[in-house]
Amino acid sequence: MDKVKSHNKVLRQVLADYDLYLMLLPVMGFFILFKYVPMGGMLMAFKDFNIVDGLWGSPWIGLKHFRDMLNTPAFMNALRNTLYINFWKYLTYTPAPLILAIMIYELKGKYFKKTIQTITYFPNFISWIIVFGIMMNLLNVQNGLLNQVLVAFGIKPIPFMISKQHFVGVLVISDIWKYVGIESIIYLSALMAIDPQLYEAAMVDGAGKMRQIFHITLPGISNVFFIMVILSLGRLLDAGHEQIIALYSQSVYEVADVLTTYVYRVGITSMRYSFSSAVGLFSSVVGLIMVASSNMLARRYSETSIW
Image (cartoon, rainbow, N blue to C red; front, side):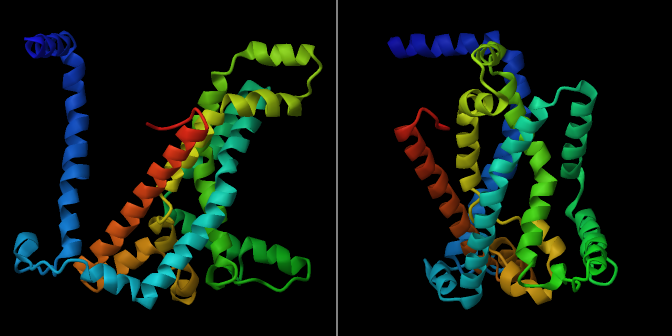
């Protein structure tokens, strides 16, 4: 009887807000069709897939592809490169949107602030192919702007785009330049929620701008920062395949080939669909473990967590 009453109550609530649920249906349909249904392709990682027999007709081979993956030097090199590139990206990129958001928030001129925001947001809407053209104009050995400046100061030109020593730096800097502005929007929204009276009270007590930032601003948006860090750990084994495919060349494969480009090359070019599916599944599982474990630690030692 209680269950019937509970179901009737839920039904009445749904009917009362039926228009909202109708608006939700297209979003749910999108995620079901393009996010959850393709998960069935994970079975390919455990099969010897061939196009003739199809996914269901291909024979099961268990964990063979995963064993082959861990014994493949090219995979291990791609894994090392992914971890190395992401280490530098996280080390430099994680605080960058936060710092930019605080700098924009502290600007006084309304129009100047909007101009800076527009300039920093704009690169997010540029494709990586266009970024590649910009990088070539800046870093080209023959006539790149940066190398012309180096030559003017008596320094030998540096082949940034084809140098194993410098290419990771190009990836990190171009990634920050492209995404730091759009990521700062999240922190700016959090900054707007801080009570202005806290700053007024701090000014009355004689606190300078830096003390206000460290004692009011940063604690006020710490929850948002930790959530962003937790979510970013889910991309631990995703070093940005679009960026790398657009920027790298054969001369820097040794340091720039990451798991996502390795999956593309092995799966699409070599048509080893099952093996590339195993690599992709491995990356996804590692990302899920990192997000779940970091969320658990955050929930245990702080008041911040995603769920």
